[in-house]
Image (cartoon, rainbow, N blue to C red; front, side, top):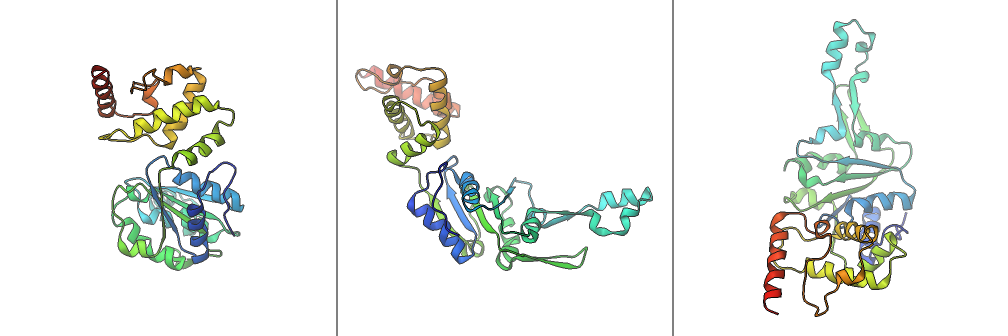
Length: 280
């Protein structure tokens, strides 16, 4: 299996090499990068390009590693026993299979996404070391060992909110998605807006990178914010002139709320514009 990009996802050469290296080494691909740089979408597009079903496990702060394996619903079994339900005789009826169990027992190879692993408790990655390394785990309630029929292609994403354990990192192939340069960004935009006028795109890109380059921003606008902003510019039929100033001075762009997502950044930007205008 080789990933060579897709029509819906602009993958750089080093990203394609990373995907294929993880498949060759049979190790999870740990993908880091700013929010909105396409980490989750990468797993979706690789799975589609390789013709693999995709199982997704979106991690929350309360997620435990055991939930990815299985959960034993003891409460339902107790309730059914009080009601005299015959289902209680078979404990299998109360085993809720997690995404790893589903991936391991699938009759065909699958892709598995463990999304935003850094949201969970610090022990979460360590609790999955053995299972991801050996591709097996033991279910104590049913006294059976679940082994992978086919090794899944595993993607793990992280927003770098907390450090991951060294033992976990050792078992992964790592890739950091750098923020796209202007030329790569144009290719990404072209996938989503193939008929966008070049003049509008050029002006919008200049504004976007100017805003992104502003020092002191708490959250820099990402690729997803740019795409949302362009969608609004097209929908609202914003004229090209609104994105350009006659003297090339910085100004507040229309619909700036699509780019800046908190009041500190908006205030900082407006203050810079005010100072810039006062110095004319």
